[in-house]
Length: 565
Image 1 (cartoon, rainbow, N blue to C red):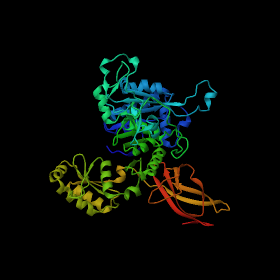
Image 2 (image 1 turned 180 degrees about the vertical axis):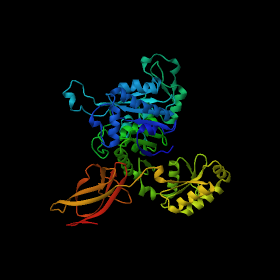
Image 3 (image 1 turned 90 degrees about the vertical axis):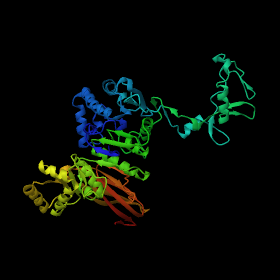
Image 4 (image 1 turned 60 degrees about the horizontal axis):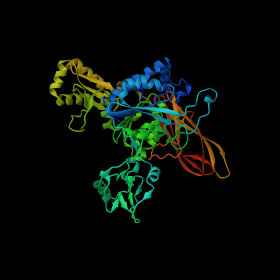
């Protein structure tokens, strides 16, 4: 199964295509059962349709809608895998009893995490009603089996280490003396632990906490110290600390409201929340799945933590915003990832790496690509019954390609070649963007005169192809102050048969670094920006309703006047 992939589409249908026992951790934050219009965040066609589907039959329908997806999630989880389902008070009782307890079993319940998402009581309708305001969410944790790899501790922060281990030894190591050497007198007499060690005797009848051998062993390790004042000290060092125990009440992670992490997505979850979950229930190189990718926090955090990942969403905006968040982080040596849309841009795939395109389109056709590039008779893959496939990343394929392909197929496997002819089956398939008159005529002649069937397959017959949107940018100076600062209005004019979804802006564009937007989600296509005297590179990206995109970049020179370069 390929990983590090963003997939646009209905997660139920996509989940059905994923392999059994292939995912280590699933985090899902499905739309809450609130029946409110504010639940529609992106507002594009896919999200609105999903919202209407969930609500067409009330709470029973919502539970049915979510349950059939959770059933698929359990199937694709490994035996060591876990699921973290994020919900709120609207339906958490139904979700636990009618979905998770049934699908995963009550014995595989691991925790009900309560996350305090707000630091103070939220103002609003609760003051007008008689309901106590809610400031928490619920995250249910279930495992597939008893083999689940769930850690009960987390790594301590620097501040926590300093607080727990405030002292430093001669080598600068943090330690504390919280663990005593002697047992408390109230624990009763223990004659077997009453002994003399290196001239020291326990003054209490309850004795030492360790056997004599263990005490000497700890001393040799440097964990028992005889101080200059002649007293004993038992030390615990920070490097031996197993971590902070994870409880089910999480009040130390703030919600995302403003700041660098905020992307303007109202229900965006903080990266620290996902970091705790991912580190708690997975290891590096494991695969993390988020079937409701939303603003992309799960996959961005998984990338940073060296996990593989799969993100699914029915919203074009969710997928494209997440893609740009990942691209913005690309300088952190992230692994490459792919984006799977409903339609594919002709220009992009037509000019992609030839070998990668051949392998990819053969897989889309249902075949298997050749792993080697030489010694394959010029063939690029085969169907499930081993019938050869050739891919030409070109238009107007001519007759010579058909002639060469026929010869290669016969040399590749003569027995299969003759068997397919005898059964009136294709001897091979040629995939290309389009075919010329000569190729079409020769294929017809071979079929009619020699009973040799070669199928010509257009790329658009395998995958839907569209033309990416166009974009133009207009510049208007709004004002100029006495310091030479110019306030400029930018107006982006995008055009696509599918309709324009949104724009993104990069006012510090560097072609080598790639597009890293300061304005991630702009529905209007208009932005105002203040520039000092100098030269600038600017880029705007337009995304249409199919998820296809285009970018316009240009230089801007400001020195008394505005000059577009």
